[in-house]
Amino acid sequence: MRLPVIIALALVLGACSVVREPASTISGDGPTLTPISDTSRDLMRLPPPKGKIVASVYGFRDQTGQYKAAPDSSFSTAVTQGAGSLLVKALADSGWFTPVEREGLQNLLTERRIVRALETRPGAPKPPVDTLSGLLPASVLLEGGVIAYEQDVRTGGIGVRYFGLGASDQYRTDQVTVNLRAVDIRTGRILVSVSTTKTIYSFKLAADLFRFVSFRRLLEAEAGFTTNEPAQLALRDAIEAAVIHLIVQGVRENNWALRNPADIDSPIMRAYIDAQRTLLTRPEVEQILERTPLEQAPSQ
Image 1 (tube, rainbow, N blue to C red):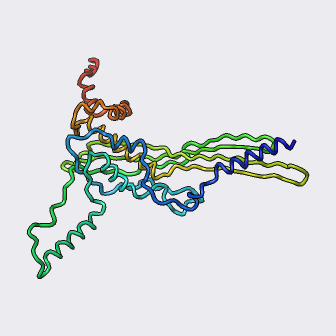
Image 2 (tube, rainbow, N blue to C red):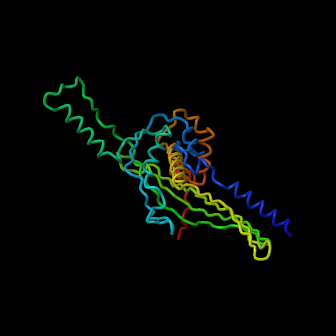
Image 3 (tube, helix red, strand yellow):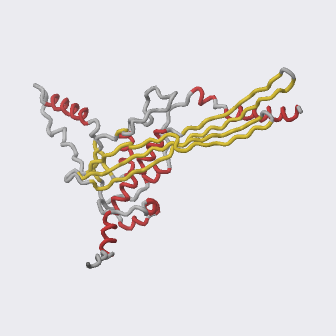
């Protein structure tokens, strides 16, 4: 009877050594650059545009009103409030847009006024040329925000126990959805509007032992670990996917163009076009209506 207990104890203690955090993690690692994902690589490998689009972002707010689940709430929001910064970086990384500062526009104007005041103060030498040029106007305004955050969309797990020795795993999925739209500043017309959804995964694995090894001697041990996908990285992936789909759909609707039209058949473009194959653009709908004659109503 002792041999199974000894084997189980060895397995549990071995699991403890496996799931134990390394000393470098416990003591704290130095800061590193945020790791990039497959979506980030797709964003950086998009074919070049015919001309960069000057775009402005005044804000990309959290419109969900969701807070973290209790007991970890503390009135903290479920998603980061810095989605605008993530969007600006995604626009710059794509190579299709030239983002201009608008979220901190007041700070920029204050600094420009300081420079003007220093140049015009009494006794200051007049600069040979104007050191401040005009601000770059945007041709496209990017609007939208985080429109949904659903918690516990799917939960589940599996477990087994035999003679006091057990193991189990559990999983949970959340979902974050963003909407991104491009607006023509000359007319206010919405050129393209896309929505993307990213699933956030959480996983827990645990093993435990509860057994009487002899009279009045109880052996109890447990080990496990939990993995939670960072919500801000999932939100970044959703925003980057929205930027890619915005570019691809804009090309399909002739709102902007590729430098080389043949790049429409590149692997990256085809992958995202295939992802949109169930969504017909407005020009495609009009072409279908032109080719399909309307049925004549029967005469009375």
